[in-house]
Length: 165
Image (cartoon, rainbow, N blue to C red; front, top):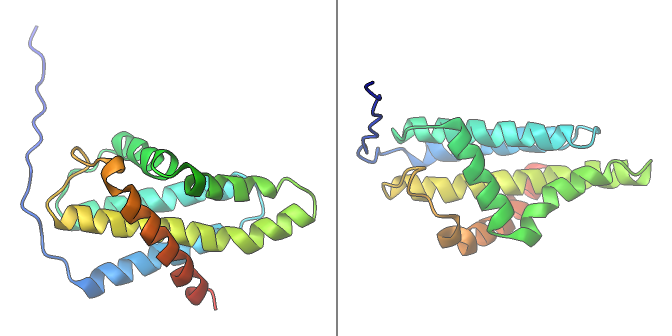
């Protein structure tokens, strides 16, 4: 029996304009913030994950990087969940506050858009940098970027707050 061999070929890094990347990232941050307004606990978190996967799929296409949905889901979990446990648990924790009648819903709806936008912004900036340097999903190491992710998350909170005005 012959087994099929899958070969992954690294492609040259593609030049993508800063304006194009900023527009793409802004679009996904707005989408994340809108999903954060969903009053149903965990539904907002699921929507946020879908938007972030779409962002990474689109970035991968722009940089000619092969996209593997299951691999990317694991990378997202590692980056957001493993690299910074205190920051990473924030989107899910905020989503879960919506289970608390009245006050929880208000707190979640006020807080979640900023947290969702900041997380998406940070993920986008991390992968823009990684892909621009010739990286792929297969050689991505969340541990190597956790300080940069934290920096971009903080910057993303400011960006999302300004976008929300």
